[in-house]
Length: 83
Image (cartoon, rainbow, N blue to C red; front, side):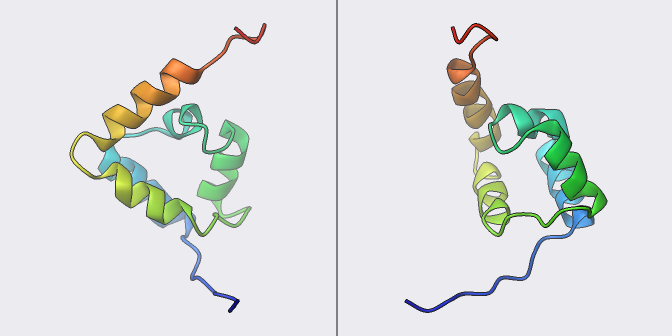
């Protein structure tokens, strides 16, 4: 299987994508993408952004995509007791 190399999204590009989608870093975290700390590191350029994230962000741009993703994530959130 061939190895693929991807140009990594920059923190600035991620920030722009979040702005376009009307999402905060916290809302991205609520989608289960990563925790707040990691997302903020991505935004500051302290960690590489996963190659799959730009694909997901594009899918969220589909009509109703962001709202639907947030609703699904919300339905799967558990409290600290696992409920």
